Picture (cartoon, rainbow, N blue to C red):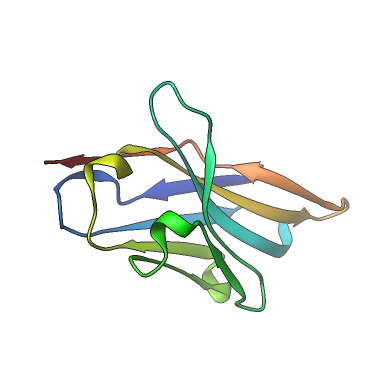
Length: 120
C-alpha cells in the first residue's frame, strides 16, 4: 500500500513561517515529480509549487520569493518552507507525487491534507 503522509501544518500569525513535510511510503520503485497544492474554503485546489526528481522547481506567482520547495530523494520526502505568510495563504495544503509502484507505471497520489491557518 502506497501513501503520502503530510505534517507541519498549524496556526501561525501573519508574517510567520511554517515548514510542511510529505513522506511517500510503501512499495515504491521510483518517485517522479512531487508538489504541493492548496484548497481554500469554497475554492478549487490550486498549484503552489512542484519539483522534479532532478530538482527543477516551479512556483505559483503568488508564492514566488516567499515559499521554497525541496526534496530528499533518499527519504522520498518533499518539503515546503513557507515564509512571510499571509492570511490569504490559509488553506488545506495537499501533497502530490508521481509514484511508480512495483509492477506498474507512474500514477499520481495525494496526501490527506494538512491545515494551514494564518491569523491577521
